[in-house]
Amino acid sequence: MRTVASVCLCLCLLALAAGTAAAAEVKLGVNAPRGELAAMSQWSELGKYLGAATGQTLTIVPLKVGDLVATVSTDGIDYVIANPTQGVSLIETRKATSLLTLDNKTGSQFAGVILAKKGSGIATAADLKGRKVMSLDASSAGAYLFQAYHLHQKGITLKDVNHMVAKKQDDGLLAVKNGVADACFVRTGILESMVKEGKVAMDDFVVVDARQDPGFSYVHSTVLYPEWFLFAMPSADAALTAKVKAALLALKPDNPAAQAADIKGFIEPLSLDGYVAAMKALGLPPFK
Image (cartoon, rainbow, N blue to C red; front, side):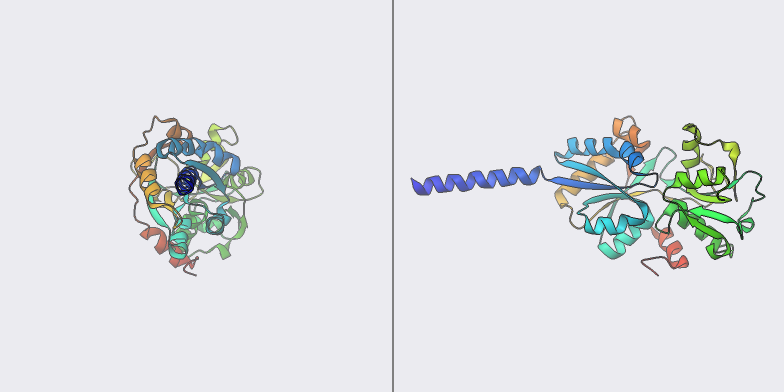
């Protein structure tokens, strides 16, 4: 009887442990270039969607742009929605795997914008020399890498300008509007979003080296690059990763999670080769 009771107790403990493991918290880190509150507003519904689809609790963790790679490496993050610059570093240094590319309202690509204050006399990259230019740090794709590489290809470096670093992209636009900076780097869509929010007006700015690409509606200065990616870290459970990927590929534009994130969904991962080339040309980590 004692043996039977012991076996039953072991089975109960194993079942309890299995149930606890199934309910274990899974962390989904998200890049937060516009701050923590904006990131939570954008991605919380996606966390709920994935929780319902996988049977796991997914906790959204907003991550500062400059700290993302280090935080993912030390804070038990299982999955991360990051810009590809950060993703290249995660792949090279932390063995991350690219799972999916974000499919935005304007498609699976985005670009960088160089914005100058209207009336500043700045219209081309050459006009930036000696002027006050604000960007995010070098870990940002749309608010640093794209523009820095664009200037590099024209023989201009950030040593040729009075470079300042902002904490979030909104700050750069407001600095230009208020005359604190002459120009700023932001990713496509930020200007249009802030105009819609009533924070700035289109007429406040000039798009430096403005270009047009068929089917892409946002103002931009650089060539187009693949959008943000979803990456899986080595700590992520393989079976759960398969469920997460399937659920995100099945995400429809009319789903509340997609609407809150202002995206259409996700697609199979695109190539990161363009990012690697730009990062190597600029001598950025992990190729420094």
